[in-house]
Image (cartoon, rainbow, N blue to C red; front, side, top):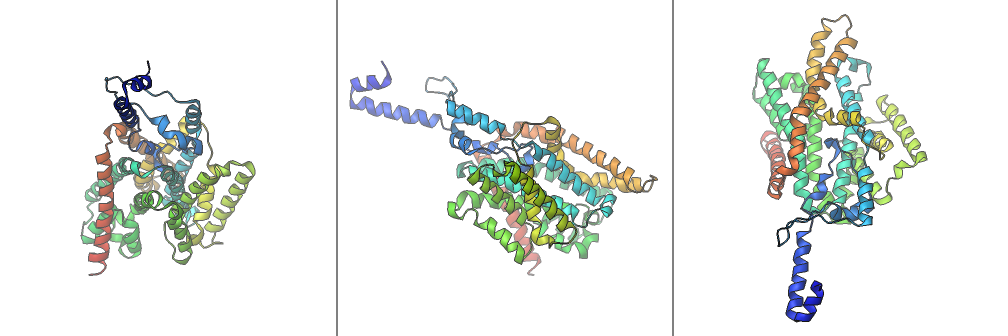
Length: 435
């Protein structure tokens, strides 16, 4: 006899007990808080974007039953619709994003190397704008799909993925400065403080021309400004995309683009990436249409050429070809192992490409070729260093991330991020600039 039949025979009290048991069992089968945030963003090496069908059934796809009152552990079997959604989700991978990451990081390296003399003046910055749009698309899409309950895991994932390599890069920067005997005066410590609190883009780079000699190794690590922009986005975007009313969630990002025409800033490209993700949520992968993709490629190429040759105001329009490039290469496909590794090492390569540039400068005085040979050797050296960094540090950390996560740790990471940003802003605004 089934449970419902037994309840009917035993009377009203049994019906109450039966209903309570069903309610309790349902709660045991709920997915863990933050399960959706396993879909990582721009810098994680996974380019996952779920379709609307997959998003509707995601909790059922990822839930695993906890132990029942008898102690047994079982896994819920997916329905045919959930199985189809699982297939849709697993195939929604953007393999060309892996390659795009590495190309962008390599472009920054070349712009900073002696070969940069043969590139347009803003080439290096434009590659960073492409990074921003890619982050906005992937992270913005992730946040638009999720709920507020999985925010702690989102912050936890960002902390492990971004902070650990970044902290190691700052420590290595200090070691190099000490080894080379640079004076660590008050101005030097100020710039290091801005980097550590993710406000260097706001208060460090504006002083580059005046105090470059006081910066760590004459501004060698100036590219950390872009990490600060990314981290500010990771902290602020969840507040807008998860906590604001649905009708207002995109308003800050539209305002960022419009405001960039009045007062140029560094956030327009990442905002454009978020809006691209929002358009996908509304109209699915509209950019996958062949004619639209051809038009996007044309806009991206023409816009890039116009920007880098001065036909358009760079600071006002850089976001447009940058997001056009992201949209033109977006598209589901299978994981390509070589590209995946290239995407995985792009972040440590970007952080520590200065090491290869140091080698490049030394080789330039030895080699008969002033540019080609030193640049190639330095590039390969930087890539090898990034590969070792990823294999020895990042990959083991990412492999253990799910086991290390807890709701409390996720909230602690969020608190730490906002605290660091708050301390940096407070020092710069209240102490340094006002007094």
